[in-house]
Amino acid sequence: MRLLFVLDQWPELSETFVVNELEALRRQGHAVRVQAARIAPHPNPEAPADVDVEVLGGGSPWRDLAWLALRRPRACARDLARRRRWRREEWVRPLRALAGPARRIVTDGDEHLHAHFAGGAALDALRLAALTGRPFSVTAHAYDIFARPRNLREKLERADAVFTGCHYNVVRLRALAPRAVVHEVVMGVDASAFARTAPLPGGRSVLAVGRLVEKKGFDVLIDAAAHLGDVHVAIIGDGPLRARLSERIASSGAPVELLGSRAPAEVLAAMQDADVLAMPCVVARDGDRDSMPVVVKEAMAMEVPIVASDEVGLPEIVRPPYGKLVPPGDEAALREALQNPPQDGKAGRAAVPDTRTEAEKLSRLWPS
Image 1 (tube, rainbow, N blue to C red):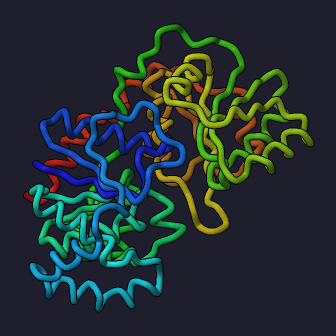
Image 2 (image 1 turned 45 degrees about the vertical axis):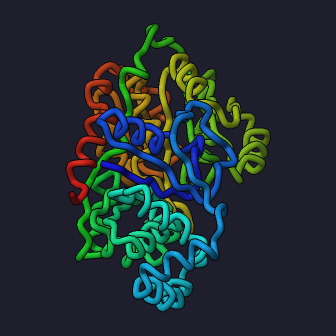
């Protein structure tokens, strides 16, 4: 199948799951190209260089719009009529900006459009599908469901298929959009790429990975670390809360190091040196939350024991004997779990969802 991935940005470092899925689909024989609203400000250095990537804003928009209006006048008129409704909840791209991509979809023979995240990319995919007569699907993740669900019901119910990465999200989406066809397709990992090459260090090293935002619960981790004695905590990631978290570390004397963003290979190396992965997710005050962070599955593949919050989709993947769950936001419970972490990290590797298997499931569920 000729597939078009419709994305807000490519190839974002924190969205390795998009790259992994695209590569798995290409290995299955699908021809996949990317349409992105922009090049990611923090690009993934391991993204494949041979992907056909089209960034919005090029070409001859008015000429393309004339081409599209002549061939699809009713679809263009419907798109313009719907703009007022969509604009009540989110910014809507001018039709002329989508005319060039629509023209290329038709001329290149793209057969299916797939958007990652039910935000701007999903609205672009919905509109392009209507303009070109192609089916489209969307994978909804987390912020686009819980924090900024803009025009979400319409996006879900007009999609030919909806995917999300955990049962927790499936329940939410089906309740929100009863007519939507919602499937659970987990964001898997290639376990062979995360094979451990040395035994666990056997020390007191804790690793956490994620953007420095409220929903990750890193403030709770810092508070717990301040009372963990000789435990060392390293947090990989960057984000708007970096200064606030740095102040919290300094004022508490917690043995926590903020390492900033790291390439996937560097995250892998950090996992080799970690004794436990901490994923203390919480529901943020604005409703934002994680679903099932990919880094948890990467740690499982690396046989690293996991301590995580009993929140969102984490209980679906973090289980004994390789994982331990604690109430979200409970610093004392998190501290106790990190002092006495699970010991059988090897058991986690067998439970890792595989990228190839999940991509095959995805392609089977796409409408033909």
